Image 1 (cartoon, rainbow, N blue to C red):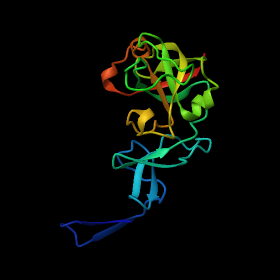
Image 2 (cartoon, one colour):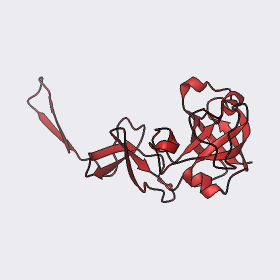
Image 3 (tube, helix red, strand yellow):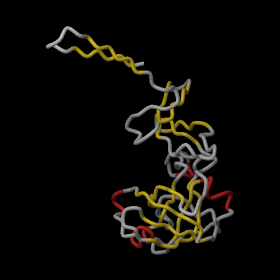
Length: 199
């Protein structure tokens, strides 16, 4: 509960306003609704909600503690539609690029290939391996078709096979350099809003 008192010097009126915030959502730097997770090891932890009210029931399946921080773990992703909103990140799929061989086929790929990894829920246990998705940049309006070759693990992270990285968020399309270039986006930005659909 937040309590504000406003005093108006020109008038003897005192106005008192009491605001009650919802225990499950708050407005903060989360760029929208935030989720509050009470964790006995670290106390209350606030993180950005990645879903709208039509999230299809996709909620965190636990918390991973890594590098002194807590990260939500997801076994699901937002529902797939004809224009599914996602965040595009960049991945180096080459040998020595920071992550292991791709889950689909167990091999490395060149960064000039139009390829992506998808969050655990969208990867769907490998059922999208080898399938193509159409990705459209919300910034440039440009589109590209890319092949799914890997999972961006939304459950595990921080350990050996994850190069010390935290788990992927549940709405990630992790694209190669070629995907970023085809969409006319600057890799240095790190993240961009996109939509995707099955091609």
